[in-house]
Image 1: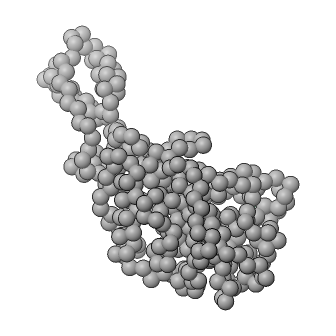
Image 2: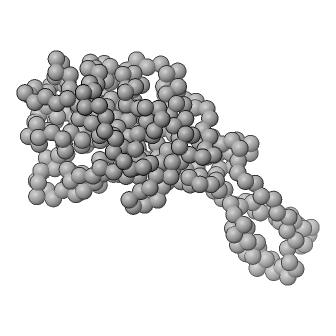
Image 3: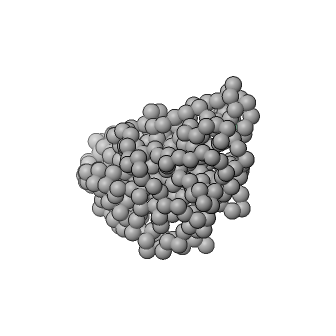
Length: 328
Ligand SMILES: [Zn+2]
């Protein structure tokens, strides 16, 4: 029995990944009880994985358990929904059209994801219509679509809570526990558990350029201190592309000082990356953390650069244009 870093009850703690393993997180720790972990899994981790998990699928990231989540894309030329599992595109649902002359079947048009699927469907049709003659086949294979579109979400309230939890979790394993349990971090603990009217994290493309090298799809967590303002700032980046800042505390008063807590991994190779130990993250003020003044253009540019990272890593993978819908 130890104290859970989320609900602060004395309970048995369960082992969980700090960055969800579904997107390639490797570091795990026993810091939360099972109830808290289960709640996080359902409410917030799931949202993050749903939003940006397609990167893990595209990069074929090896997971400890489970399979990479296939994602749906729409084939631009005809609107068909296809599923991409990291290797190939498949039709989500087969289509079958049957043309008849009175009672006689003249023509059957089957479109499916594989030859096997076509065989299965045609044998069912033969049975159903009691067809004795062999069906004359005309096969037409398409290697794959040329252009597809998909939606993804990388910034909403559950995702911000999840990102806050990820930054907070690194702090839990790196700092002395009495410091983490101090009232300085009550607000962020409550925010992670329940959310609040004002979010304590934001997608941030200003002052977070140091979180990516634009070459490797790195996951990075960095915890910095703005001593003058008593702020503890979390920087979180996934796949070198999705970058966030978290206000972990605005009332941190302690004699403790740290040079910047860092955790960086390459989720494709699974290797840890050691950075410059003398590096100092920017000392941001609260508005810069919670409402960064980044333009829409800058965000789109950075996301496009992120997609280039995938193109560097995966053969035959081309991610073209990114367009953003304005939030209402
Ligand atoms: Zn708990």
